[in-house]
Image: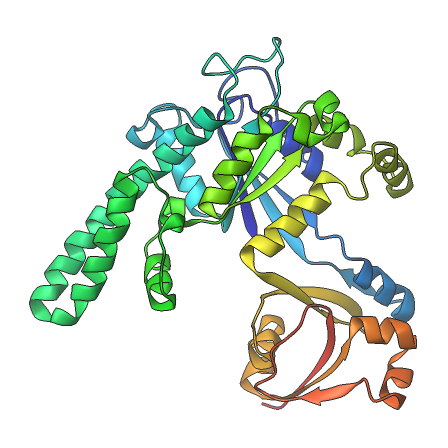
Length: 364
């Protein structure tokens, strides 16, 4: 999974990126400090995997990972090439989802590219540039579909749908806000539209506001309202706090968070929000050679999950031997789980569940 961290210049993108990836990207008080996108890979925290590692003492421990991309700050006119516009938009296109950092703090020492703090305006500025870029892409697809209709009238439905999407874009609405049937959603995903990508708005607050209670931050409410209207995610976060805990040990980090009334770091909350937004779950494989977490779409069937490990596993799928992690933990071992009838065999139609500990049987 690749997540693009975007936003206007000087909203805290690179500070947040550095904190959650320890990648050391440059962060400074001037626009376009980030030019080339910085990339950092982080492990997805999973206490279930830790427990399995203590059970099996494996030679290899492999958590799921997320790639974060810190993309150059966008400015008004980016869709027409202003600032680093075209390059910025191309970098977003490669990401699975967008983490849109919105400035919700006041600091006279950190200049705002628009001269004042206004989350609603900032979100609209970024979204408008994505929409303007999408209109160019969609117009090309409409022209292509109109030519296809001359040969086959069945494409009329596609054309009607694309025109409906274009109307929404012209009204300043994102592509993801368009109501779609399942078939229409698949059709929409075939067009690489930036405003159709899932979004989490990361409301970046000051350390003082974050500790005082996010609902008291006057800039947070408009961000929540926009996210709700779009069906997007929203996450209050403090890049400053994340930077403070970035280099702490797990024990020190836990104590620090407890002191400010939090159970999870911003990174953990962001990952959980991204999994939820994208409809992702994890299944686990465990043994002495390796314990590993695998990320799949919710609703994936067993053979396709097996294919995540190796194509041969899917091609020669026989069955999946599964125990739910919670059952395994309660039993303490696979042997006890088998005795209690909690270790089961599932076939090709089994839909994987989050936390399934699985052994795939296959033959090719």
